[in-house]
Image (cartoon, rainbow, N blue to C red; front, side, top):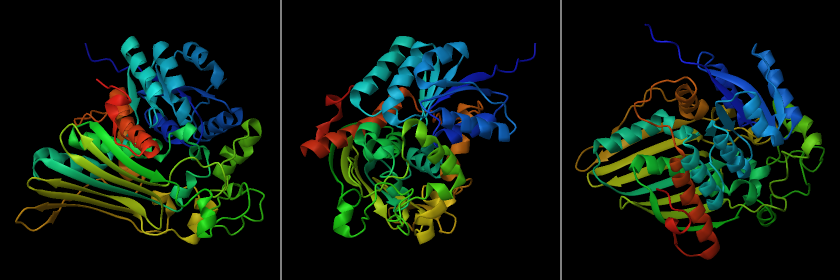
Length: 440
């Protein structure tokens, strides 16, 4: 008998902010394997907006549910996979509930925000036998694939150390300080929310796990520090404020129809303001962070995240017993004043439009001239082309010989470096990750 076509899996999504959009588009791109069947959120207006976007794309609209009815939604809509794109501190609530309801889960990174929540998820995976996949899309970037291939080939030998620097420009970096991420209770700070991407890459590249972390972090630029540097203006939020006019650190939600509909027009329902002053009070996350980590392989990593750079990109260097590998990526080489504010105030990467970017991988063997490694398939769209490649595997069933799907264990190991860094910020001491959480 001929092989039967695989049954379409039924997906429901919880959390319909901007993070949901890539997943919704990707589900629509794989109609033979995936079907979106429901939304859940604390905000009905945002769910209605997503349904209007579905209708405008010629796709059927889906039932909507209050977030408190998440479990009954899973049952009523016969959901196979729950997509979790809500505020980070709520991830564990939905992940655990979905697992116990018999569903698999795909969750935005970070998997969660602290060690007890992480343990709840790991326990639920063990208890139910269901699968959690963390959407670490950076694994699917062709540049990062090539780095893994070169390292695995042994071309630069055994890896002794890694230096990793990530720069968020004053458009992208500022955006974490005007929305819910600015409160560490919501996001775990940039060591968890943002850097879990980067720590997962290092784990994946090295085939290793973190053992001990020492770190220093502070709020140097945003928050009330902005008064010291002369950037702060006296307003609570940008919308409706004359003080915000002309401020390159303000975002004009009303000027962007997309953001206006998703946030400004929806805020009456839950009070969430997307355009808080980045130099206002209440910021509890850091913007300048330095990390030293030791791994099970014996390698060490020095890592630095700066959230107030004039340009955006990253540099990763691997020092090996036979040479050195360097990855240099410029996502944009400056931030134009119009791009810092206006319509592009919440966007970065290719969507920044006018700025230039570049990417280069170079191998430096001992006693030989360095050579650049070509990387076909890399683009400036969708995290270097990673989003399309990841969702083709997750939703389209595409074969992945590199085995890049990140499990709950991978999510926990990426989280642990950031959690240990946060603890080290507080104590000024090195932190053994096993003292926070044991991951088998």
